[in-house]
Amino acid sequence: MHQDRIKWVYLIILSLVWGSSFILIKKGLLGLTPLQLGATRILIAGMVLIAIGFKHLKSIKKSEWKWVILSGFLGTLIPAFLIAFAETEIDSAVASILNSTTPLLALILGVLVFGVAFVKRQAIGVFIGLLGCLVLIFSGANVNPHQNYWFVGFVLVASVCYSINVNLIKQYMQNIHPIGITVGNFIGIMIPAFIVLMFSDFPFSEVTSNPKLYNALGYVVLLAIIGTCMAKVLFNKLVQMSSAIFATSVTYLIPIVALFWGVLDNEDFGFWQFVGMGIILFGVFLVNSGKKKV
Image (tube, rainbow, N blue to C red; front, side, top):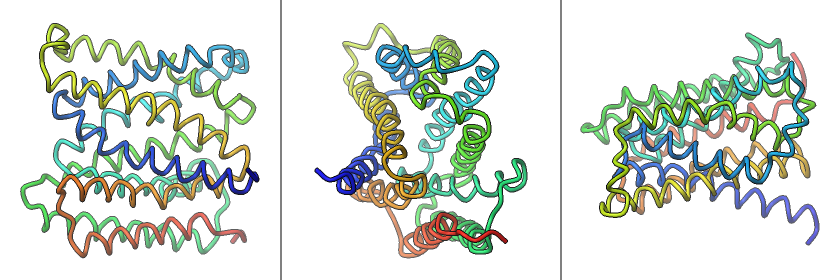
Protein backbone atom coordinates (compact mmCIF):
# COMPACT_ATOMS: atom_id res chain seq x y z
CA MET A 1 0.00 0.00 0.00
CA HIS A 2 1.31 3.49 -0.90
CA GLN A 3 2.60 5.50 2.07
CA ASP A 4 0.07 8.31 1.49
CA ARG A 5 -2.74 5.79 1.83
CA ILE A 6 -1.15 4.15 4.85
CA LYS A 7 -0.98 7.43 6.77
CA TRP A 8 -4.72 7.95 6.18
CA VAL A 9 -5.40 4.42 7.44
CA TYR A 10 -3.36 5.19 10.57
CA LEU A 11 -5.22 8.48 11.05
CA ILE A 12 -8.63 6.77 10.83
CA ILE A 13 -7.60 3.94 13.18
CA LEU A 14 -6.22 6.45 15.69
CA SER A 15 -9.42 8.49 15.53
CA LEU A 16 -11.52 5.40 16.18
CA VAL A 17 -9.28 4.31 19.07
CA TRP A 18 -9.03 7.66 20.86
CA GLY A 19 -12.61 8.57 20.03
CA SER A 20 -13.75 5.34 21.69
CA SER A 21 -11.66 5.93 24.84
CA PHE A 22 -14.24 8.26 26.37
CA ILE A 23 -17.09 5.74 26.20
CA LEU A 24 -14.73 3.07 27.62
CA ILE A 25 -14.03 5.37 30.57
CA LYS A 26 -17.76 5.86 31.06
CA LYS A 27 -18.39 2.10 31.03
CA GLY A 28 -15.45 1.45 33.35
CA LEU A 29 -16.94 3.88 35.88
CA LEU A 30 -20.00 1.63 36.20
CA GLY A 31 -17.93 -0.72 38.38
CA LEU A 32 -14.95 1.36 39.48
CA THR A 33 -14.36 4.72 41.11
CA PRO A 34 -12.39 7.37 39.16
CA LEU A 35 -9.30 6.70 41.31
CA GLN A 36 -9.52 2.94 40.77
CA LEU A 37 -10.07 3.33 37.02
CA GLY A 38 -7.23 5.80 36.50
CA ALA A 39 -4.73 3.81 38.57
CA THR A 40 -5.64 0.46 36.98
CA ARG A 41 -5.41 1.92 33.48
CA ILE A 42 -1.93 3.31 34.14
CA LEU A 43 -0.60 0.13 35.76
CA ILE A 44 -1.84 -2.16 32.96
CA ALA A 45 -0.57 0.15 30.20
CA GLY A 46 2.75 0.61 32.00
CA MET A 47 3.41 -3.13 32.32
CA VAL A 48 2.67 -3.68 28.61
CA LEU A 49 4.81 -0.74 27.47
CA ILE A 50 7.76 -1.71 29.66
CA ALA A 51 7.59 -5.27 28.32
CA ILE A 52 7.72 -4.16 24.68
CA GLY A 53 9.81 -0.99 24.87
CA PHE A 54 12.26 -1.25 27.78
CA LYS A 55 15.27 -1.24 25.44
CA HIS A 56 14.44 2.28 24.26
CA LEU A 57 15.12 3.75 27.72
CA LYS A 58 18.80 3.95 26.77
CA SER A 59 17.93 6.90 24.51
CA ILE A 60 17.19 8.99 27.65
CA LYS A 61 20.15 10.90 29.10
CA LYS A 62 20.46 11.30 32.87
CA SER A 63 19.82 15.05 32.59
CA GLU A 64 16.60 14.41 30.64
CA TRP A 65 14.91 12.10 33.13
CA LYS A 66 13.37 14.97 35.11
CA TRP A 67 11.57 16.17 31.99
CA VAL A 68 10.46 12.64 31.07
CA ILE A 69 8.98 12.05 34.53
CA LEU A 70 7.29 15.46 34.58
CA SER A 71 5.89 14.64 31.15
CA GLY A 72 4.47 11.41 32.55
CA PHE A 73 2.62 13.26 35.31
CA LEU A 74 1.27 16.01 33.05
CA GLY A 75 0.61 13.95 29.92
CA THR A 76 -0.80 10.77 31.49
CA LEU A 77 -1.18 10.45 35.27
CA ILE A 78 -3.08 13.64 36.14
CA PRO A 79 -5.36 13.68 33.04
CA ALA A 80 -6.27 9.99 33.54
CA PHE A 81 -7.82 10.84 36.92
CA LEU A 82 -9.27 14.22 35.94
CA ILE A 83 -11.17 12.92 32.91
CA ALA A 84 -12.46 9.94 34.91
CA PHE A 85 -13.77 12.31 37.60
CA ALA A 86 -15.34 14.55 34.94
CA GLU A 87 -17.26 11.67 33.38
CA THR A 88 -19.00 10.94 36.67
CA GLU A 89 -21.06 14.08 35.98
CA ILE A 90 -20.86 14.96 32.26
CA ASP A 91 -21.41 12.91 29.10
CA SER A 92 -18.48 11.18 27.44
CA ALA A 93 -19.11 13.01 24.14
CA VAL A 94 -18.94 16.42 25.86
CA ALA A 95 -15.70 15.43 27.60
CA SER A 96 -14.13 14.45 24.27
CA ILE A 97 -15.13 17.71 22.59
CA LEU A 98 -13.71 19.81 25.43
CA ASN A 99 -10.54 17.72 25.31
CA SER A 100 -10.12 18.77 21.67
CA THR A 101 -9.21 22.26 22.94
CA THR A 102 -5.71 20.93 23.68
CA PRO A 103 -4.14 22.43 20.50
CA LEU A 104 -5.65 25.82 21.38
CA LEU A 105 -4.27 25.73 24.92
CA ALA A 106 -0.93 24.39 23.66
CA LEU A 107 -0.58 27.44 21.44
CA ILE A 108 -1.47 29.85 24.28
CA LEU A 109 1.03 28.25 26.67
CA GLY A 110 3.64 27.93 23.94
CA VAL A 111 3.44 31.66 23.23
CA LEU A 112 3.24 32.83 26.86
CA VAL A 113 5.73 30.43 28.47
CA PHE A 114 7.97 28.95 25.79
CA GLY A 115 8.22 31.87 23.36
CA VAL A 116 6.66 29.99 20.44
CA ALA A 117 5.93 32.14 17.39
CA PHE A 118 2.33 32.34 16.18
CA VAL A 119 0.30 33.84 13.34
CA LYS A 120 -2.82 36.01 13.25
CA ARG A 121 -4.96 33.12 12.02
CA GLN A 122 -3.89 31.03 15.00
CA ALA A 123 -4.75 33.80 17.46
CA ILE A 124 -8.20 34.10 15.89
CA GLY A 125 -8.55 30.32 16.10
CA VAL A 126 -7.83 30.35 19.84
CA PHE A 127 -10.49 33.01 20.42
CA ILE A 128 -13.06 31.14 18.30
CA GLY A 129 -12.27 27.81 19.99
CA LEU A 130 -12.69 29.22 23.48
CA LEU A 131 -15.96 30.84 22.39
CA GLY A 132 -17.11 27.40 21.23
CA CYS A 133 -16.28 26.02 24.69
CA LEU A 134 -18.59 28.56 26.30
CA VAL A 135 -21.40 27.70 23.87
CA LEU A 136 -20.93 23.98 24.55
CA ILE A 137 -20.83 24.38 28.33
CA PHE A 138 -23.85 26.68 28.68
CA SER A 139 -25.98 24.79 26.15
CA GLY A 140 -25.04 21.49 27.78
CA ALA A 141 -26.15 22.77 31.17
CA ASN A 142 -29.58 23.52 29.65
CA VAL A 143 -29.90 20.19 27.80
CA ASN A 144 -28.73 18.17 30.83
CA PRO A 145 -29.81 20.14 33.93
CA HIS A 146 -29.28 17.04 36.11
CA GLN A 147 -25.56 17.04 35.29
CA ASN A 148 -23.02 19.15 37.16
CA TYR A 149 -21.32 21.17 34.42
CA TRP A 150 -18.76 22.55 36.85
CA PHE A 151 -17.06 19.20 36.21
CA VAL A 152 -16.04 20.42 32.73
CA GLY A 153 -13.29 22.15 34.68
CA PHE A 154 -11.62 18.76 35.19
CA VAL A 155 -11.45 18.21 31.42
CA LEU A 156 -10.13 21.71 30.77
CA VAL A 157 -7.42 21.28 33.44
CA ALA A 158 -6.53 17.93 31.81
CA SER A 159 -6.26 19.74 28.47
CA VAL A 160 -3.94 22.31 30.07
CA CYS A 161 -1.78 19.42 31.34
CA TYR A 162 -1.68 17.91 27.84
CA SER A 163 -0.76 21.33 26.44
CA ILE A 164 2.14 21.85 28.85
CA ASN A 165 3.30 18.31 28.09
CA VAL A 166 3.36 18.93 24.33
CA ASN A 167 5.51 22.02 24.83
CA LEU A 168 7.85 20.19 27.23
CA ILE A 169 8.42 17.43 24.67
CA LYS A 170 9.13 19.96 21.91
CA GLN A 171 11.45 21.99 24.14
CA TYR A 172 13.40 19.35 26.09
CA MET A 173 12.88 15.87 24.58
CA GLN A 174 13.46 16.27 20.86
CA ASN A 175 16.40 13.83 20.82
CA ILE A 176 14.74 11.00 22.77
CA HIS A 177 13.17 8.05 20.94
CA PRO A 178 9.34 8.46 21.07
CA ILE A 179 8.88 5.00 22.59
CA GLY A 180 11.63 5.82 25.08
CA ILE A 181 9.66 8.89 26.20
CA THR A 182 6.48 6.84 26.58
CA VAL A 183 8.10 4.00 28.54
CA GLY A 184 10.02 6.52 30.68
CA ASN A 185 6.74 8.33 31.40
CA PHE A 186 5.20 5.16 32.80
CA ILE A 187 8.24 4.20 34.83
CA GLY A 188 7.86 7.56 36.57
CA ILE A 189 4.12 7.28 37.22
CA MET A 190 3.49 3.60 37.97
CA ILE A 191 4.54 3.86 41.63
CA PRO A 192 2.21 6.83 42.32
CA ALA A 193 -0.58 4.98 40.47
CA PHE A 194 0.03 1.87 42.60
CA ILE A 195 -0.12 3.96 45.80
CA VAL A 196 -3.41 5.52 44.67
CA LEU A 197 -4.80 2.04 43.92
CA MET A 198 -3.81 0.74 47.37
CA PHE A 199 -5.66 3.62 49.08
CA SER A 200 -8.71 3.51 46.79
CA ASP A 201 -10.47 0.61 48.56
CA PHE A 202 -10.17 -1.54 45.44
CA PRO A 203 -12.29 -4.69 46.01
CA PHE A 204 -9.63 -7.26 45.06
CA SER A 205 -11.63 -10.12 46.61
CA GLU A 206 -14.59 -9.42 44.30
CA VAL A 207 -12.75 -9.44 40.96
CA THR A 208 -14.11 -12.86 39.96
CA SER A 209 -17.45 -12.71 41.76
CA ASN A 210 -18.77 -9.20 41.05
CA PRO A 211 -20.10 -8.91 37.45
CA LYS A 212 -20.04 -5.09 37.50
CA LEU A 213 -16.43 -5.13 38.64
CA TYR A 214 -15.02 -7.61 36.13
CA ASN A 215 -17.01 -6.03 33.29
CA ALA A 216 -15.54 -2.66 34.25
CA LEU A 217 -12.05 -4.17 34.38
CA GLY A 218 -12.60 -5.56 30.88
CA TYR A 219 -13.29 -2.03 29.61
CA VAL A 220 -10.21 -0.72 31.44
CA VAL A 221 -7.99 -3.42 29.90
CA LEU A 222 -9.23 -2.36 26.44
CA LEU A 223 -8.67 1.27 27.38
CA ALA A 224 -5.12 0.62 28.62
CA ILE A 225 -3.91 -1.66 25.83
CA ILE A 226 -5.70 -0.11 22.84
CA GLY A 227 -6.47 3.43 24.00
CA THR A 228 -3.06 4.02 25.59
CA CYS A 229 -0.37 1.58 24.37
CA MET A 230 -1.50 1.03 20.79
CA ALA A 231 -2.59 4.65 20.31
CA LYS A 232 0.78 6.06 21.41
CA VAL A 233 2.69 3.74 19.08
CA LEU A 234 0.37 4.57 16.15
CA PHE A 235 0.60 8.30 16.81
CA ASN A 236 4.41 8.24 16.96
CA LYS A 237 4.50 6.27 13.72
CA LEU A 238 2.05 8.68 12.09
CA VAL A 239 4.20 11.68 13.03
CA GLN A 240 7.28 9.97 11.59
CA MET A 241 5.67 9.11 8.24
CA SER A 242 3.73 12.34 7.72
CA SER A 243 3.94 15.64 9.59
CA ALA A 244 2.98 16.99 12.99
CA ILE A 245 0.18 19.05 11.43
CA PHE A 246 -1.30 16.03 9.63
CA ALA A 247 -1.01 13.89 12.78
CA THR A 248 -2.76 16.45 14.97
CA SER A 249 -5.67 16.57 12.52
CA VAL A 250 -6.87 13.52 14.45
CA THR A 251 -8.23 16.17 16.83
CA TYR A 252 -11.05 16.90 14.37
CA LEU A 253 -12.18 13.27 14.16
CA ILE A 254 -12.03 12.16 17.81
CA PRO A 255 -15.14 14.14 18.94
CA ILE A 256 -17.13 12.82 15.97
CA VAL A 257 -16.37 9.22 16.96
CA ALA A 258 -17.02 9.95 20.65
CA LEU A 259 -20.32 11.67 19.77
CA PHE A 260 -21.37 8.59 17.78
CA TRP A 261 -20.76 6.34 20.81
CA GLY A 262 -22.49 8.83 23.10
CA VAL A 263 -25.63 8.91 20.95
CA LEU A 264 -25.65 5.09 20.82
CA ASP A 265 -25.45 5.13 24.61
CA ASN A 266 -28.50 7.43 24.81
CA GLU A 267 -26.63 10.58 25.80
CA ASP A 268 -28.63 13.78 25.25
CA PHE A 269 -27.01 16.17 22.78
CA GLY A 270 -28.81 19.34 21.70
CA PHE A 271 -28.59 21.58 18.64
CA TRP A 272 -26.49 24.26 20.35
CA GLN A 273 -24.04 21.62 21.56
CA PHE A 274 -23.51 20.64 17.90
CA VAL A 275 -22.97 24.33 17.15
CA GLY A 276 -20.45 24.59 20.01
CA MET A 277 -18.62 21.51 18.73
CA GLY A 278 -18.45 23.00 15.23
CA ILE A 279 -17.08 26.30 16.55
CA ILE A 280 -14.38 24.51 18.60
CA LEU A 281 -13.28 22.33 15.68
CA PHE A 282 -13.14 25.37 13.37
CA GLY A 283 -10.95 27.13 15.92
CA VAL A 284 -8.64 24.10 16.12
CA PHE A 285 -8.47 24.05 12.30
CA LEU A 286 -7.35 27.70 12.24
CA VAL A 287 -4.71 27.06 14.92
CA ASN A 288 -3.28 24.13 12.96
CA SER A 289 -3.38 25.83 9.56
CA GLY A 290 -1.45 29.05 10.29
CA LYS A 291 1.90 29.43 8.49
CA LYS A 292 3.06 33.05 8.35
CA LYS A 293 4.48 34.55 11.53
CA VAL A 294 3.12 37.86 12.80
